[in-house]
Image 1 (cartoon, rainbow over the protein chains, first blue to last red):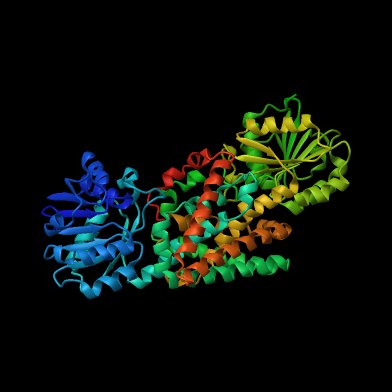
Image 2: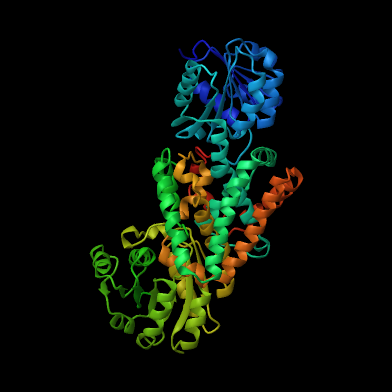
Length: 306
Length: 306
């Protein structure tokens, strides 16, 4: 079973939705590939560049004929969209999303989900700091991870069909986990690092000094350019896990401060070696440490200042 | 005036010293290029690979004949070396260092500096997370910044000679500033980001979960592998500036925590937009924002998860 007799609809042709449509149009055999967006220009651009067969501002028509639907809009909007279109989905359709919060979607959708619809939460660990279909590229998925949060009700055949499609469009790992486990993990691996980047640049020194930065500073601040609408949702909807990991981080920083103020080289070295061990463990357990190189970081060693 | 009639000695053939000797041997015309190290093997490797003319474990002989000396060892060791070798330096010699702390060196060396020696502090904003001459490469300097902290006594001719050499070996910017201004800046741009990386990985989640990381997490944790000896010195010797910037960072994190706990999207957006403005200012004022691309970060957008 594959998608060759499927109509696929991508809802929301932004960076991820546009890239997804581009990847599917290039690598997956389907019947029809449709796009839904409130922005006519995005649909026109997608059609002009041949990544969708047809674009719709009204979702009803394409959804009624779609066997697989990717909802690629913000978390709360995705919940709203799926709820409002519940009656439009085709019987037996697979509906999935790409939002960075899986608990919210799961809690909101499960109670209202039709029995003949298979909702499988998804989160591509891919993207960049840009927005909009004009930055879309199927390359952003190459070698990336995809977290999938199927429900107990999800059909295994549907899960494997979706996995198969994701591997074909370039993902290196497709991992299943629970929605809560996912939200706990991304609070630590993504939400906190973004708060760190923002908190670092919120320093008056930037205004009154010309700063000569090394690699470590560029690394941390790269993601300080964020999409405020999306990130307000992500941080507030994932508040409990974000604050949990923020508190762990805060107490670690206090440990460093205490050691530095106390001129305590022994405690400092203990913190260093504990961190080294965990970092090594992280690199070992990492789904694909090879990515460090794949992503060309070896090229970044150049002119690094550590 | 150039270095063609100079004997140059590099003290400490580690990553920086080794790379410096390699770059000078390839790109600068000199009389002799010597290396000093306590590690005979490092000297032998440097000679075998033809990056120095001769290696010495005893510094006296080469220093007496050297017109330019690069001291490429840890801050306190550099102070100790320059103090103990003060009587050995050749009259009129230019002595410089490459340590990440300029206030310490300046305070310790100034009072004991011979009038016929020109000490010019230096800090190449280059390197990588490796140690030792076996990782040496002149490429690490390409496009990097070099901070120079000449004293009021420094001869301009010597400063320009050193600048000229640094440009020839690949540095894109050579900037003069005061030792204190330098230490304040690196506390913010390097020391704090390293503390952040270490504090992030000090999280039990790493031990009991398999983590699927995106680009933002890899960025921040890349530098969590550090040289404990060096970093104990850097953080403790630069304690006041490090704690100053750590405190600013801590209070920003508390602002985020407060906004998240209070489900306060208004404050969150204010923090976002303030940070965006500063980040843009930073990128504009950055000595060479082009570096972001030069360093191949555009390649890293691939499979980014923000």
